[in-house]
Length: 86
Image (cartoon, rainbow, N blue to C red; front, side, top):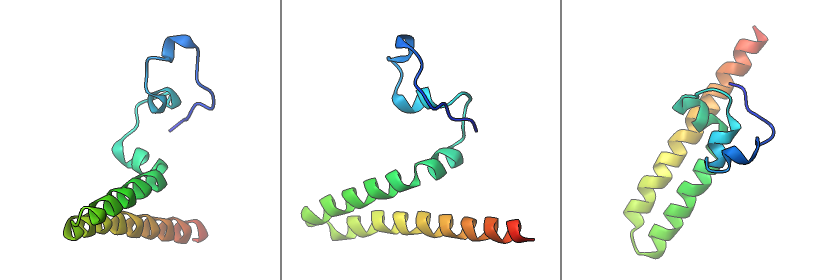
């Protein structure tokens, strides 16, 4: 996956910024890895909002998704690290 470091010209101003960053199509896994911090932050904001609305069970559901994403990321990092040392 190649990411452009600069946005290109006024012709692309109509596109969302994320679409302007990539030279080629990417899959959902690549995007999720790249924006995992943003995704986890948004899930936590959703959880906080749900708690404020008295929807603790729903908040827990979204925190559970965030936890699973973070655990999966940690597991993949450990595998990459192990593979790099062998």
